[in-house]
Length: 78
Image (cartoon, rainbow, N blue to C red; front, side, top):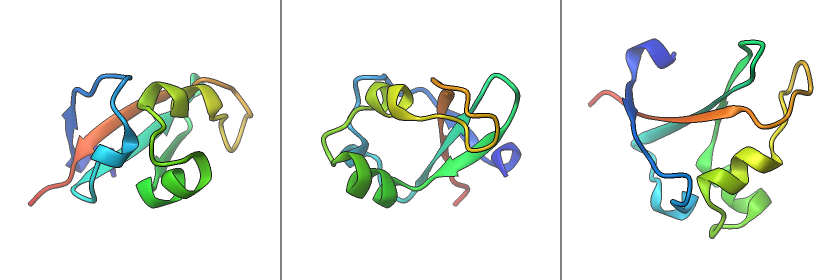
């Protein structure tokens, strides 16, 4: 999925509340496991004021349980 998307540079201090549905948040662990993170779920689970850096600190891989995945933001094609 990420191969069809355009990567966007976003500071780790940016709040997830400012990221709308035109963007996709992907987390990838060191093993290469990749997962899409839905902003609505993150807002409900962690709070709207949480930053990208805080999301990264709280996550772990859904397959290998590795912590601190790389969080990338992509713009969806128009």
